[in-house]
Length: 284
Picture 1: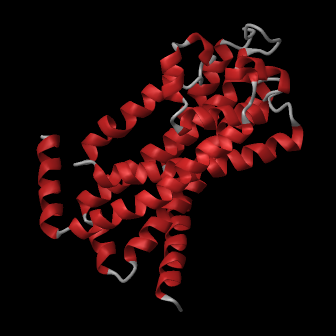
Picture 2 (picture 1 turned 180 degrees about the horizontal axis):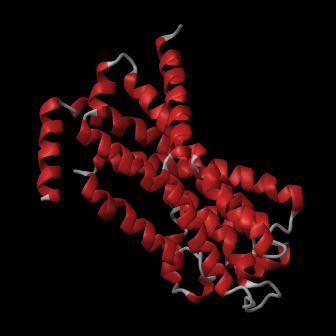
């Protein structure tokens, strides 16, 4: 078998195995339940509030945006933390020692993080369908839109997490380099309130990054056409969504492999030992 294909197959097996283990992990199950409870509780407190300018209630408008935010947050922060941690504990160094090991390792990460979206979405969508009326108002066409938005969102954001995980000096810095910027973008990307209330330059900045467009695409999937009045330009801007996410996906596909190859070449046993010592000092 071709060595590269063998590495990809090995990576897929590894990603699938880790996903099954995560479903049995009390820590991961607790995370899914905590996320679901937090989101549903927040929406329930606002279930009787109508969104100004429409006849829609707040949960109907906010839920698709929150799903988009969870997608971006999970696909950036998850790989960033994992790669940074695996650099410190020597996992990447061991993968580097195996022919095409980095290819298989990255393949496993891609599959694991992709599959992890399923329980993240289901623990919100299934209870949400019972708690809130008219959650999906576009039928099967809406679910088709969800599918391509998730796919493009994955391709656009997963490389960002891999680049951050390859560049940060250590696990402790992922919060500064990754989580903090994502939380800032979360606040300015129209997730919890329409963007028209923000300053013009803030709207411009938010539209540069994938989070806004993933949220917009998810809202276009779940909400009726009339709800587009809440958006910039009073339109779902589907072509622009495809274009921006597509540009980020292409840029990520070009940049992420280069950054990761350089990171792998620099990885050495002495660096792993230094990272472990630094981590111990952090704990102390």
